[in-house]
Amino acid sequence: MPGRAPAVTEGDQLEHLLESDRRGLLGYCYRMLGSASEAEDAVQEAQLRAWRGIEGFERRSSLRGWVYRIAHHVCIDMHRSPQRRARPMDLGPASPMASAILGEPLSEQAWVRPIGDDRVLDTAADPADVVVARESVRLAFVAALQYLPPRQRSALILCEVLRWQAVEVADLLDTSVAAVNSALQRARATLSEHRTQALDPRLQPEHEALLARYVDAFERYDMSALVELLREDVVLSMPPYRLWLQGPTDLLGWFTGPGSGCRGSRLLPVDINGTGGFGSYKAARPGLWEPWAVQVIEVRDGRISGHHNFLGPDLFAELGLPPRIEA
Image (cartoon, rainbow, N blue to C red; front, side, top):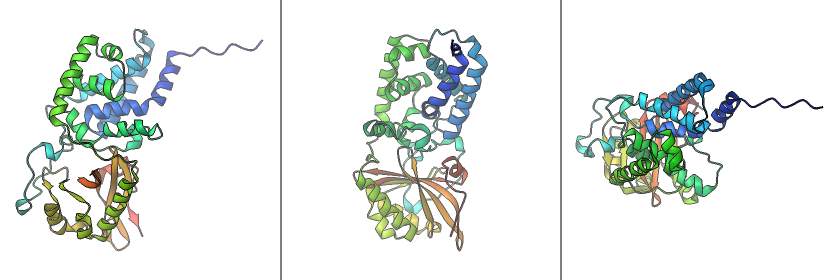
């Protein structure tokens, strides 16, 4: 007689869950924390705690719910700082170009940080679902989430982004369905105060054509061509600095003035925070370009509405971008 198949243990099920749902778990932690590196640390810590505690798993909830509960508590433990991660636009008004100076950089913990789409989104899913998923990792949306208390933030991410049932979320948060629905109502009200207009979907051919025109203009440093691609309310930001500028005239003034060191740069594309992005490499010497900034380019109504530059080389390896470009 054929041998009986070995029983599937909780450890086997945990291993399968951690492998198959890692993208979802990382996406949950990223939206909770606003930083890709912190989210990665949170996932690793949650996995470690899960493996340590699997023998005591009593099946009073689903295994997935148990793992996400662990991740939730890890995120809470990591979010003790009173400082809320934000974007420069959340910290004060735009500076006029005439008096624009970078000032002192703030710490990395001050900013919502970008993340590559492939780490948190299933880009091979149904196109309609991909569009919705991309909206849930926009920089503005992740920054708005940081205004919410942790339990409201968790409830909103689980119910409205990951599509969990309220009863599952209630079990994870050790509360009632009514309390979850109340938390969702308060979270939606807070987000409505900070909501920004939707960006153009990446799947539109016009979007890709616009990005191609942008790359051509930026690499040639043709500022007249670049300005033609900008909305009248376009914003330029440069974390880790608080400074941000608004409007094509001020952006032109920056790129031809203090930012003119970007002349001769090369751009490599990367899908980031649900929109188009680029690794920007500054010319170091003839035939060599070195990492300078990660650009997140937001597009609305067929024109560029956001030009966000995360200065420094630390994000390049995280996004799978090469450490340099050589001719």
